[in-house]
Picture 1 (cartoon, one colour):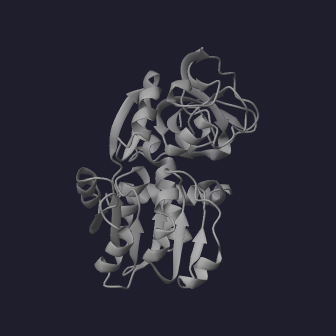
Picture 2 (cartoon, helix red, strand yellow):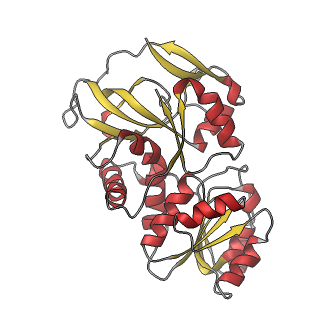
Length: 325
């Protein structure tokens, strides 16, 4: 029996229960991990609340990101062996001392990446990778707007965007978060609670506006995000921290400058194993080089997952949050 955090009924943070569960031997194509760190992400709250339905029904073990040591491999697994250090993003099962997972979703960690770094960045860092390199391929001279620039994905987008030669504008909730965003590569910050961020973007850019907006906030930043884009610009909505964007009249993309809008998700970008490995390698390389650092600003024992979710939803966290099993 091992400790895990499960959801028996959907609801607020209080529905996360710390309990003992049994993890069987790995089946065909599976590996068993002894976890060293578990990532905490906003998407975990969507599953906990029932906004995203659990693919395995109830109860389920929360969490979909982590890193650990392989302690058993199932039949048919050839490229991963006992003793390998791996990181992953896999639907559910993450908040536990041990877990089973498909071997083809595990990525071997280079020596330069620690378990805690991996658990803090596999989801957020690979999300930043596809947003910056594939959804809109950021080039030197681009101007990008990053909402929630002090958040887990935000600080990575700011650093990496800066390293690619872009001018980075970040929106944040308060002065402390503005300092954090600037320390992580944002050239300009906007306090979105006090300022009209679209007007401020226009002022900062001298009316030229942005090539791309990366929005993990959702409801409260739409449709003003579209007013931050130059003609033919890209609106990438990858999260719903303030609630989902409701159906909108697609005609406004035309009237605001033949804009592009997308709602991407990591799962589609790394569905093929070769894409998963290439995305992870790009992330590991940029972190190993020192151009992007992964700030782990909150660590909680596994048993304190309720507090981790309360702090995350209460906007009390910055950078990455992990649980230590």
